[in-house]
Image (cartoon, rainbow, N blue to C red; front, side, top):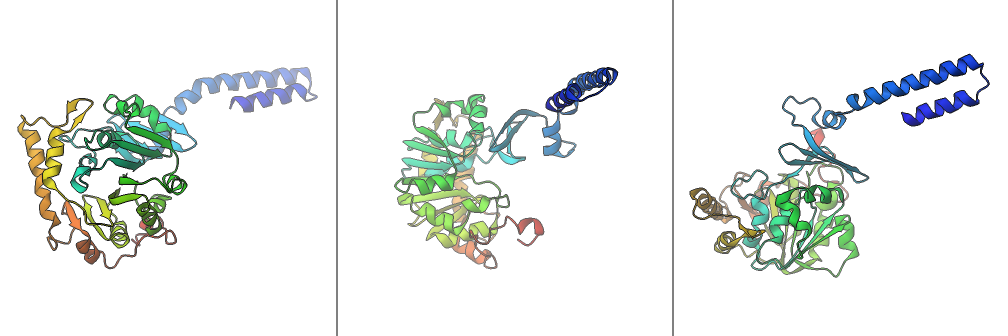
Length: 347
């Protein structure tokens, strides 16, 4: 607006007009400038909220907004993080009051006996990175995040801010798939990806058979890949077809080329000793915290084959998934997964 008015004023000056017309034009430009200065801040104050919530009656105000060439990150008043208008996590590391599925990164020791080196694709709120970095078995965590805007938000949030200065953690600004191709010699005990929704643009890059084959080359012997399927049957089937062993854990897949070392006793012991920034994650003197441990231990029943081929089980092995999803096509770079079919109700 300011540039437009300035150009108009310059034209008025250089045009061959009678003096009264020039004075009138200049006055009009000044009036329009004053009106714009007064009205634009009011009219544009809630533009991002209007675009994101689209008039939803229960919309919460946005308390933080980060705009850069990688997109727009917003944070609602309840701590929910949105990437380009879509749910992208929440600031929360509390396992007892689990509002964001934070049990999933806490489960790393359920799948691997000693995940010393971990790669995480995607940072978002930093909650997952904070949990994994404090796993007592993790010696190093490399995080690949394409949008550096998350770093500023994390720095302002006390429960996750320390992940930025944790000596175990290295954060790299890059595209996950590109980084993997550029670092063929890097291998890890576990690779974790809290992948965004399966129907979003470019998500196939992190869900396809081709990507899973790329992941294989970056796993140490006995290594696991743990990634979000966002409840897509096709994504789950793809994981089971790409790897020799695997299972669905809640809405994630955990897959490997060697048998996965499921150990609920080991997991319970790890959770009992888990500390973040020196504070215990669980207080075993409280019945509520002990109940969480007991509930998580009960999920072991889901490992049994034919325990029910449905998504109500917390754990579902690949043989059952392959039967349940027998009518689904795997996700490949060529078919673009569900990015185009989802909204046409074809998937």
